[in-house]
Image 1 (tube, rainbow, N blue to C red):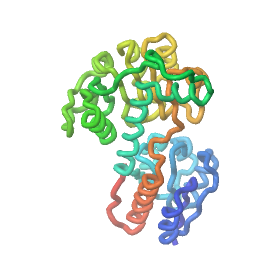
Image 2 (image 1 turned 45 degrees about the vertical axis):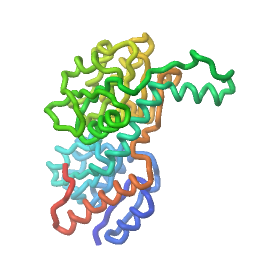
Image 3 (image 1 turned 90 degrees about the vertical axis):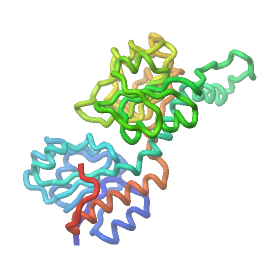
Length: 316
């Protein structure tokens, strides 16, 4: 029977579906695999279902020149933790789980836009600390979201889903930066990145991670943004130069930020955790049971199709 490793615990329904088709082993740790574990996984299993943080790099592949593993069925749409070129060079197929994550991630994006603009996390901390002295007219005045300008950096599935929520739900005007023109369900204008940053009241990042987008958002972008603007990232942490973001927040170059991802997860700079104007989430983008189940079933189907010799639906 085909031997498959799942690198971290997944929802039970997903594991049941996988056990019905494979000789399944589930790694019990919730932490990413280290290099030794990844090399062993490539050598000992026919297929691996890895997750965010399992860094299958060129260095890992280099030490397993002829892997037994023939497919890495990634759990998640982002796969910048896998060196796809190195995998292909050794005959290993890589797949992901697009579509299943779109709406959940867009929901978190919209939540961070609202929370940051309306200073909700500041208000909650005030209340929980027992420091709230009652309503008054100038307390925690934030940015009214309805009718404002939303700039979306990366206008794929998730970027467009955020734009749809913002425009149809809050009447926001939409513009975007993207390598190519996109036909969206809502009116949206394409702009150069710095022009977008200067135009937007809220700038949200929805780009894929990887070498091409690393530190795409840095000091120049923050300097272009209006002082009242908010910055939101629900994509990958290393797209943003975190030090530049901290400088922009400290100096008042931008008014606030909402972050679900970080450059060196799970490390979050103390400078960010100490700033009242920053909303911080622990990478909750797809953290809903039905979404994680859908992702898992998609990854299992990718494995099943591969080993049955069928067309694999989500190769990257």
